[in-house]
Length: 266
Image (tube, helix red, strand yellow):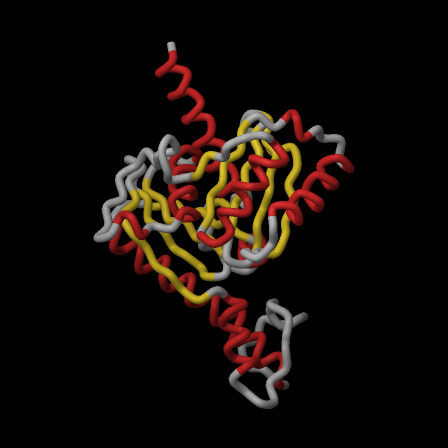
């Protein structure tokens, strides 16, 4: 089995794969100070509760946008699984696509993994929208090349900035006002929800429209990340919602690396 570890700025997701099938997944808040022993107490107990033997894990692949978290996850892999982890984007786990941007090395691992998965799963030109701490819009052409994209503040960051910078505005849920589609709010909470939620939808729709116009060819929009399902209920801008896109990309990379190693050794 493959243990795929996706380290984001807010959460770390651990997923067990049998081939390309996700058997289980667990999520924990990202904290670079968390030690290998702390990870092990939490992860091994969860695996045991769901009937998984840690000895069944034969490969570990880590993708991270938080470099400080890598050391302790590497120790976790070596100490508790007896494996040297593969690191996405580092030999032998190459991306396998052209990054047609000014600074290819600056491309985040999460966006690179999404590029791999999106091209493998969907044909043609693509716009991949990933709702994370930041919301990213990535353009992948029909050949699988990464062409660039957009980084916008995540909706939670936008809400945090609004609440923290004002004295009287309350913390609200990320959702449209209940029972109405109006954009004229009648109270403070509704006005905030309209501004945050519908403002974010308008931002997404506007940027995707501009991206499609600049691409100049039909492009499918693939949404992923925790809020993709929520936004999909209130806009028709997405062609597909794939909440497992990043994890699937790690499984694809692990499979490719294993095939390449077997060919090299044959």
